[in-house]
Length: 173
Image (cartoon, rainbow, N blue to C red; front, side, top):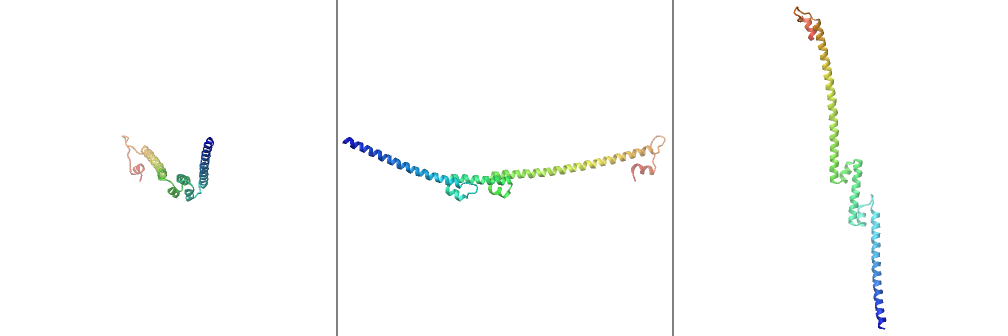
């Protein structure tokens, strides 16, 4: 009889332990089902058009913060692609704005440099044209003077003897 009581006691302890274990497992299962439901709601709330308040309510803070950063980064990328100044200033971080401003400055400098270079080339072309015209005029004048010298009257020593008309012909009016 004593063995029966010991066996019954052990059985009762085992059954109670199993009951407690099953109850704990059931409680854990309920907790995991709740977490799964929260996770599904959080995932469903995430998206490009989600409202930040909804995401903050349904998702853990860490996920909400990362989601907000990713949405802001995507908005910044879209504004950079479309070159929307206001959007870039509103959505992008300071380092991105710094690089964007440096790029715009470099582009402006490049445009100015190209304009200055074109102006210098035009000035050089005009200077070459003027120099060519002056050289041609000087050559024509020299040729004219040489032809006058050849036809000018000479004295017995071979020197040119010019009257007033000869001087006008050689050097112009």
